[in-house]
Length: 485
Image (cartoon, rainbow, N blue to C red):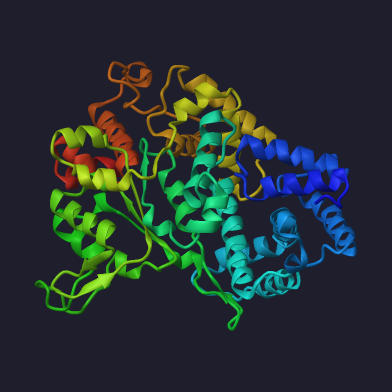
């Protein structure tokens, strides 16, 4: 490093810090600004493609001075050069990585080749990385880009709570210090189970997808593919939709003849999960203590048993669980096991409610409305439509409304405004609030019950759960929901 000019030394130091820093953190923004100033780049986008040309030129200049291979560099400066090479190669091949992620996402279960992997491997070896190390970084690059892709596209918003959530999800994938991840944990993250907490409709499912589709997947040089299709690696289920008697069979599978009607063997959720994937258990708070014991065994011993079988099956994936219930209260009531709670809580993430997000940022609502309209029409939202929806919300939704259905409710609000120009707020907005429309328009009891059932169903997506709350049979709930009012 003593042979280098000051601006080169500073650049290598900043690249070493930036390369493995959290892209959703404040430190990365500061480092990006310093790197840009050092390279003479005034404007750059979030992917920093404007850095690629100047960075490659600086590396070529340094190579001409003898810094052309890691194995020829002095040990004292090797780390900084290694990080600089990795940073530059990652951003150089970023468009190809993105293209492969897009292609694989659009092709679903069809496992695609990844030509970018072979070229990355070649370049890393040319710079002096060993074959095993180069292969590992080809996998890590792919994971880094998938993590950013799914977090940045599924957890949108401007408010501080959602910015913090994106930062926290990145840590769930790569720990708080990516140097630790690179050295110790890149192939061990399945041992860190994740518990997602938050109200219904906040986006726990999107957070689960971001984690579950972004695990480390090795690259196979022989086939030219990553060994697993990340679109198949994530499997999920909503536990509230199953009767208690069927949950165990859904999770662990069953052998032929295990019970009446088991005419053939059936693989459960854990058996269908890839070693490089994750199982997402939504509404974990709805399962009984007997199933909780079996889940604890999977977490602690990494094995499970299919119903009707005495043969253990190994499980290597990651477990992600979510619930809108208050697990501390359930623990006090003896409805949720303490040992399972603590085993899941090594990585506990709270998803912010919509009211928290709106209270933090005055721009959050318009940002989300624009995004939701774009998702409906599959193209950028026109300003006129955004303005119409915003004005309609301002005139029809009370300022004190708490949005109990969160972003999911806001999406239905936008859809209803587009279709009918009106939106009736949820009767679950607060214990002492009666919707003004009930009084002003003199709603009938049938229409009120339809509204109540609809709001509850939007929360729980289950006739049985709504019936349990209202103390009705599921058929009565369905009758009110299906009635034309």
